[in-house]
Image (cartoon, rainbow, N blue to C red; front, top):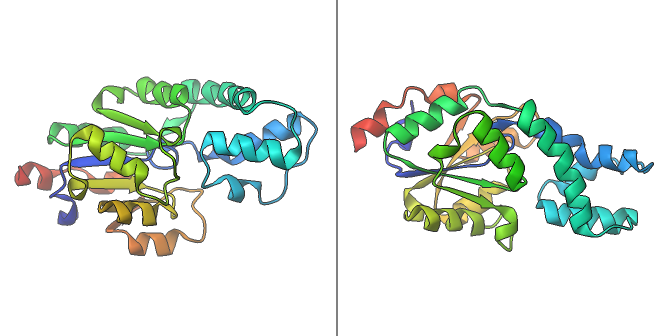
Amino acid sequence: MDPILSGYRAAIFDLDGTLADSMHVWKTICRDWLAGRGIRAEEHLEQELAKMSVAQSADYVIRSYGIALEPSAVQAQWQDMVLCQYANTVSLKEGAAELVRALDAAGMRLAVATSCFPAACEAILGRHGIRSYFSAILYSHEVSRDKSFPDIYLACARRLKTEPASCVVFEDIPFSLSGVRAAGMGLVAVYDRHSGAEWKQFGEAADLAIRSFRELLPWPPLLASG
């Protein structure tokens, strides 16, 4: 256990690719949806959508591919596709549930900051028995800018009634680095099997880089720090 984490009073978790082993769902959902409409997606579609909220992604796909639907209708169709998997098959990352319970037992306040659909987020956290440990869940559509800005992290700190400097963020997406740093928070880079070439640099820039949550168990420094 790295003692650098022992001084924090709150933890903010990304969901997809961090708590949940779910990036495979998002890697293909827009492409699969377009294919179902007989449309071949551009090669770099997923890279274009990586920084966007779901609402922004729907707007992008409608504009780019000339889809004759309202953004709300596109999102609803995507939500149905995603929710089925989150409610039935998507797993948590190894050690994620155990760490969440350990942090709660150590007195830390917990939040989720995610661009996932609310229904899907609630479904997977509830199915794995950890929803009750999170005092707040913030969704990207509730703030005006993406995670390369501090907005969603600062909103989490306010919901948790905790100073930003007392929060540590768990993220798998490299572009979140600037947002977390601008928020004045600590950062744990969490490896995901879908992480790209930027992972190494992201991990080096974070306060701590892990490949599994089991690396952080048990959590005695928190108990000792009070």
